[in-house]
Length: 155
Image 1 (cartoon, one colour):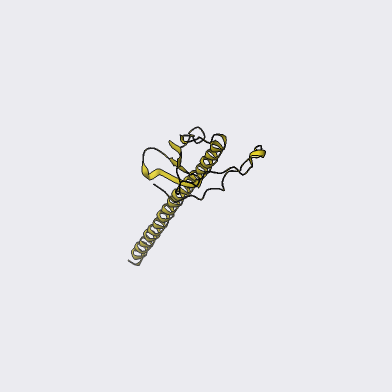
Image 2: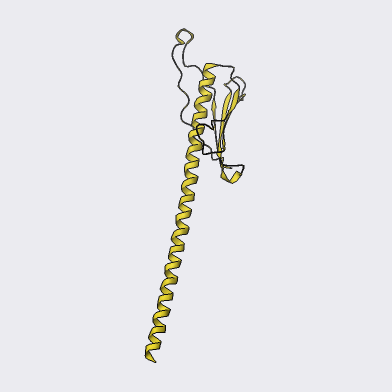
């Protein structure tokens, strides 16, 4: 009789150990998947910031080359083939007061598919760069504005 009780006790202990191990494994898997998801989101945000910086540089170069530049919608999808929705909108708006330089707005969008949940968007506004040269020394170049500080416009 005592032998049957020991077998039953060891069976219950074994089942309890398996249950605890299963719970631990499920918890570790869940945390691993959450960390992977977070890494993907952070990588996408960083790529969106790089895209925004490229848009700011493109706008600055275009404005320095052509003062009549009015903006554009740029889709550099060849540079980022893993993403379906790659777009940089560059626009100029008059400033307030009208005597000051117009403001350039650059909006970078990066995402997969049509879902808003998988899309990130960053924007940056800066005044139109004024030439730092005098009319006599036009051969000098003007540097683009400082690296953009992205506003948290996540969609």
